[in-house]
Image (spheres, protein in one colour):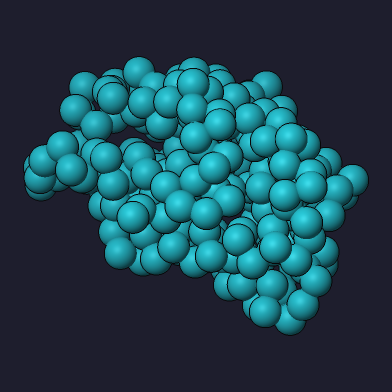
Length: 220
Ligand SMILES: Cc1ncc(CN)c(N)n1
């Protein structure tokens, strides 16, 4: 079973399935998958996603602060460095191919979609506990693992304009992160009473998934 299909995450994904589909099967994702997405749209997305990842890394720092144990702190710290050193670095190197510097990326104004999504995550972490935050963040981590897997299944990505993007999220490193995330969410949910507060968690997850869907159109 794929990590996004099992446990607490699988239940949230199932119960928010209409919104979830609008995120992982968005027109932007389809065009990215078949290579027809205009380069300009992809670049605009990458720059916004770079800005998004800056805040997402901070959200992991907050997750480390809110973690109920050392294992959670270690996981959050590892995830934060993966975002900063691997995922954001990929965006910087792709934009460099178009002659755009990291300083120019960082100086680009955030779209409302970026602003809304990132501040929602930080707010969930500040006002809620570790489970509120991890549920809100899970739409990001797991959604791209599912998208990467779906796009790879559609066929070989050699000579594809967006091969490095697809290969990153379809690749074993990112897929392993999704496996770990599913297990971590289950453990945290058991510890912090997910069953008793499920409706609130579902509302947080649904909002995060809506913000993901809006991010595709906001960045283009
Ligand atoms: C908006 C968004 N959502 C998810 C991911 C995958 N980490 C991302 N890079 N950007």
